[in-house]
Image (cartoon, rainbow, N blue to C red; front, side, top):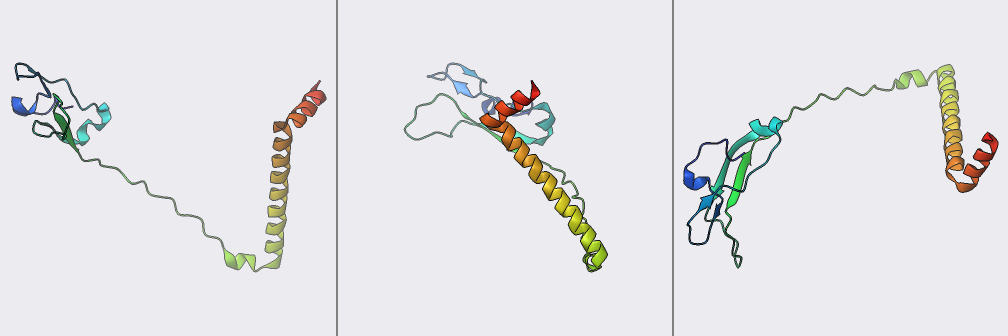
Length: 128
């Protein structure tokens, strides 16, 4: 990415041989093409050094501005509490919930039985 932007030659090279005989650009910022528009600047800092470390590479730094679109969350459906005060509706909803939880409990027990070694053996025995 640092090759796309216009800078002076002194801001482009990232590696220099000892004695400053040759200078080359061998360190890059690599980014997916769809994110290229997010990079504002990429440059090299020759004077950035780490104490007690001899290094012939320069620091490559990039400035990014990531623009994200926030998706609108759908509104959660509100529960009509007034409807639950009607005894017939409440009883019907209670029966529906009870049936759903019983079916869920059967599914959990069945899957546990199939996952255990004994249940798997019995299940295979029933199939043959």
